[in-house]
Each structure stands twice: as structure tokens, then as C-alpha cells.
Image (cartoon, rainbow, N blue to C red):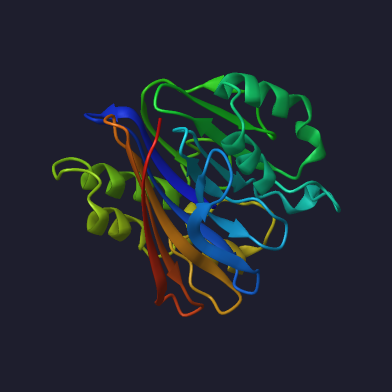
Length: 255
């Protein structure tokens, strides 16, 4: 997952609403979002290369997502899978804060990541290139490949579009949320971050929705946990040209 906007306990009747894009190499094998067997059932796509997932929810009302922290100078060969951190939280029953405290103790073993875990009542954030885990008060948050709410242009634009999408219509307003994630305009050169990947790649990565033959936005996902116990996870998948290659709509009840 490389871009996400989260409304947490800030929308009436909808304690969790997340709209997110996953950017990845097109050659990396992945399964479409589906119900994973086991207890509790997990609703997510699956990374077939390293295992785990980038974002998902469970029938127990838990959700989690992870983004990479872009820092090519500090890549650790053989580091554990960051996607496994999402699956472990969804499978478990530890409170969000206790889970992230345990991850924090082991955080330096991993390449850079940001991890948000929660349920309908609370949410916690930890980035292993930042400070200790912290609880997130009710509000709207945005996350990309730096620390939480770092105001990169792509993040600021997507958060503003998300706020417009949730302002009036009953939620989730899928067309408006997908449109918020579909912005393909790059940022001006003078607004680009410097993350060590070179100017040409910074330009390519600066749009909320990335299109390139080798690496780009593979899927857009919208997750909603309703206060009445309904859950829904919608996924739209894309090919290297940025055209829709498939969709999934999962509906479930959470305890």
C-alpha cells in the first residue's frame, strides 16, 4: 500500500472509512481481494511473493494497512515481510496498542514501513523510521511513503478530494472515492520530495495514481466498517496501462 486516507470515528454511523492505492511492480504475483479461510476470516488481497497483505479487515472487526517508507539507502537484504505484520494483527486478538508495542520492539529488523492497526473503537500508528507507537484520536489521516500526514503533494490532493467525497453523500460514496484515488497528475518539480530515487522517478511517483509499464498502481481499495456491524471491502484492479482489469466487492458482518 502506498497511499491511504482514513476517516476514523469521524463520520456518523461509519467508524472506519479508508480509501487507498497499492503501488507495486506489475510482475509481482498477487491474488484479488477475497475471504481467506480460518478464524477469524480475513478479507484482503494476498501477496504471493512474500506472503501477507498490504491492507485488510477481519470478521472480528479489526483492520490494518502498511505502506513502505521510501529510503533506498537503508534497504536491508533478507528483511522480514512487512505484509506479514498486517496478517498477524488481523489473525490475532491483541489490542491495537499492545500489538504495535510488540512490533516496535522488533522494528529495526524490517525495511522502512508505516503500520496502522485498529478496530471500530481505536486506532494506533507506528512507523519504524519515526517515533514510538501512538494512538490516533478521531479524525482524518493521510499516509504515503513517509511518516503519517507528511504533506507530500499527492497526499494533500488525495486527502482534499477524499474530504469532498465524504462531505455530503451517504457513505461510502464509491464513485467519488474511486475518483479521488484516480488522480494521475504529477506534482510540479519544485514541490517534489527528495527521497534518493532521482528526479525522473520522483516525478513518476508523485501522482496519486501511477501509470508505467513496470511499476504502478495495481489496485484501489475502499474499506468501510459500519457502526451497525456491517463491513464492506471494495477493490478495483488495474493493468500496466492503468485500465481496469477486475473488481471485487466483499460484504461481511463483524462482531
